[in-house]
Length: 265
Image 1 (tube, rainbow, N blue to C red):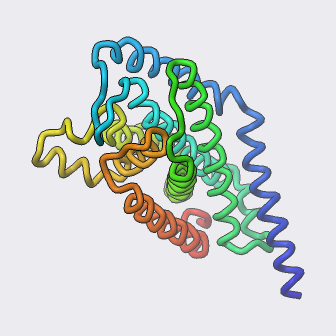
Image 2: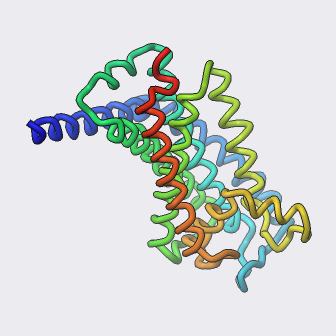
């Protein structure tokens, strides 16, 4: 009997994950066109126009063109924004239209329900991040110096922000809350996370101290290490801390589902 329950739960996980992935794949104008257009503007303005004025960026003993320096940060911005948005929207939309109740009454465990939303959101984040990386290759040449670290950081940060998106989807009371979280919390943290500048360029004191409290700094630096093989922070420590944080947030997601937070009146 337990074997049948486990099989049905696994089938439910695959089905729910497939549904959530197909939901954004069937709407490419909403999923892929906006980040494509936005990053064409980023690469054109910050990379080409301003990049020619800024010149070379020096960090960790390397000198790279400015457009190459900002590319990893733009990949992070697109990946985590879309991972967060996808799971956040999925949860809230299901609550709003009350079809999430069908999921809650299925034989799946709460951990598998949460895993479905997290995996689908991370998948969208990875696809958008890959799109931005390919787009950047049309503006400049950039290789992958540390493929293991690039893949590891990409997986961890998309899973982390997809997990945060689950919390956001449970907390949101209306559609304005969804926009507010992404535009006024996620994106500002990324812009102040070392996307457009090195940590050494910051004046010592409160500005640098506050910056080091921003988790985006470690994500951007880690992905930059994967692309360029240079970093300002210890990539192993950053990866370990981000992995631990991801597991903690996943546990919180499962706890909130089990308690019915935001799911029941």
